[in-house]
Image 1 (cartoon, rainbow, N blue to C red):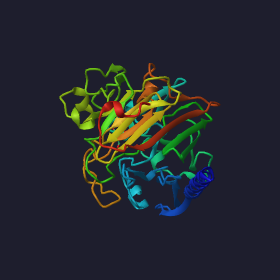
Image 2 (tube, rainbow, N blue to C red; image 1 turned 180 degrees about the vertical axis):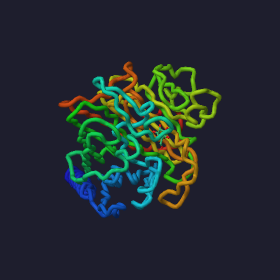
Image 3 (tube, helix red, strand yellow; image 1 turned 30 degrees about the vertical axis):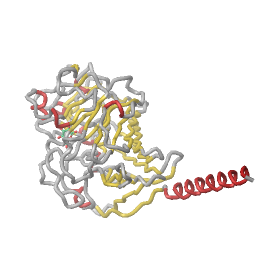
Length: 392
Ligand code: BGC
């Protein structure tokens, strides 16, 4: 009798569990809505991806931009933790690459020039004397072709774009594909691929600004960051790497252990002056091409923890030093200096002019591939001992 009752209880518990799983699974999905029109009348869409845990992200085919990302805090309260706007018109005006895919070349190419196969190419110059984030009209300002779908790992949106030979000065017709997938493991996974019909250079990344307190909720200086890198790339005054790979030990660039962003950001260290704070590439430990831990950020008040994994050799850690409060975000609040940070996984800036850096050349017939995962966790308590963080 006793066994019988126990069995019934077990059966009912597993049934409830199954039902919950089915209901939760049923909630995962992707929907497409209109996001408005560009000034030339092109229809723009916005895709909403939702996973079985309620994590939600919105992505538009204008600039392949991550418009919003709602993640839970330790109490299960969801907040939008990326900076951005709620309407297309704001994205059509100048803004500092909020959430966008930057390309054809993320970050700087010195003087907008490089030589490939004996030919010198002149790119659009849009950052002092340098080329930044693909030029005047980079991939963040073009209309991509979008398709929402359910994959085995979760809801996804596939975005494709053909960048014409000569666009912003780059050689080769480049076919680019970016797939955003929201997995059941609370990851926003980004898979990039590209092919070209003429040798070219490529360096794609995502330019989301995170604030784990929720966008518009102040600065990010109390977030604690860990970066899996023994070395970083010092730059000159115009943020072009010198070619040196400098050890982080003993410098304000040592994030091997969780350290508040604000702790050393204003120290009297030349590299911090050049960057106006952190705006540098860290050389991620381990083998490029292999998906491995790159960085993590933890915000103690909300318990939110963001982890980044990548196949890229480097990561630009940019602390929103040029935000100045003139831009008002989606909740009507301004974005002051250092109110968001970027973890831009990428090859090193100016690689086409630095033969010692890992190559960014994409040859005709070859396929460029890159993967980055942003994983969202939350911690149950406010304990802050470094050792309690999940080890990658
Ligand atoms: C660069 C910064 C630049 C910012 C643009 C970052 O990736 O490293 O120097 O100001 O993008 O918003």
